[in-house]
Every structure is written in C-alpha cells, then in structure tokens.
Image (cartoon, rainbow, N blue to C red; front, side, top):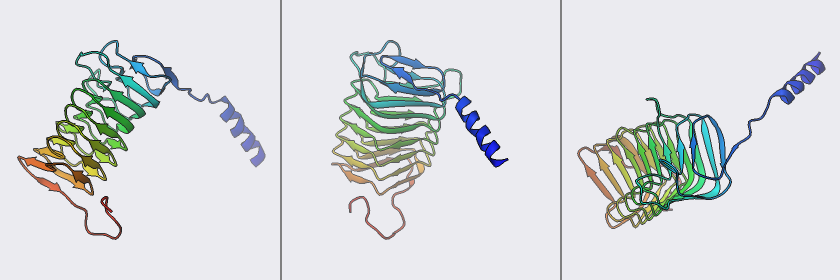
Length: 241
C-alpha cells in the first residue's frame, strides 16, 4: 500500500508544470504574477519606467544587469505602483543596478516589498524612494552618489526593515524618514553624505540602532523624536567592532 501511494505521488509531481521565468531584455510593464529574469542590460524606457510593476506576487531577478537611464524625463528606473487602488504586495527585486534616472526605485503604496542587492547610483533625485509602503525590507543594497537622498521612507511608510545597506556620498541625506513610524533601521553603513546621515521629520516609534554614521552632520530630527536610538547592552561587537 505504501509503495502504491509513493508511486502515485511521483506521478502527480511529474504532472505538475514548473513555472518558467519570463525573460526580459528591454523596457517592460509587468502586469501578471510570476518570476521575471533580466537577460541583458536595459538602456532607456518606453513609458513610465524601464521596468514598471503593477502586479502582486512578482519576483524580478536582475542577474547583475544594469537599468541605465538616457533621458531627462521625470521617470524612475523601476516603478512599483498601484493600478486599481490597492498597492502591489509580495514583490521582490534583487541583484541589479539602476543608474541615471530620476529615482532609482520608486515604490508607491506597496506592502511586503523586498529590495535586496540593488545598487542605485547617480540618479537625479533619491536612490530608493518608498512612499506609503508597509511591512517591507531593504537589505544589502548599495546606494551612492544620488543627487537627492539615499534611502527615503515617506508619507506613512510603517513597519519596514532597512538593514545592512551601504549608503554613501549622496548629495542630500543618507537615510530620511518623513512622517513614518515603527520602522527598524539597523546595521547600515552611512558615510560622507552631504546634508545629514539621517534626517527625521515627524517620526516616532522607529528603531535606529547599531548603524555606522560617518558624516559631517550625522543626525537631524525635527518635530518629534519618539524614536529608539540604541539596543539594550549585550555581549559581542557592534557594527563599529
């Protein structure tokens, strides 16, 4: 009986199709769930971004490729946005570079977004700009030499994690929180940014701890400061060793 059941399970597995990734080699609007794989660098954009994501349950695998802007149009490299009133959920973007856009990545109203191993460099405004985004993670990204700020959580972006990123030489701030609460910013290296290492405006209940700030002006807080700026004392080295 057991052998019969095992045979039936194997037969069922052979009948289940494995979803293949959709290959991308140019500007694309993603409107359906699935896995999407960049197969080459992408230069320029057709519409509102090089890659626009308006669906949930999407994985965009960059494979180390570059999205390069060539226009002065006010568009991001990657735009993650709503189309019918509810923001996209469970979107993963990883292993790519966005450069020379207005924003490297601009996410609007998304939830459970993951940006991982994304390099955002040389954009005309912010590197990674999350607007009204919740329960999301920015991890192991490099954000540098953008004309605005490096990583921005804005307008009720709450319950997000920003960890283990390198944010350097941005013209404005390294990290910026605007009217955003209950976020965890830990383990980030924030160096040589032009205005402040971190700028907080109307924020509360954020954890901002074990980050390495090395800027002329490291912190600026305006209109409230109900944030936690350190972990309880514990064994082992902190980010500075």
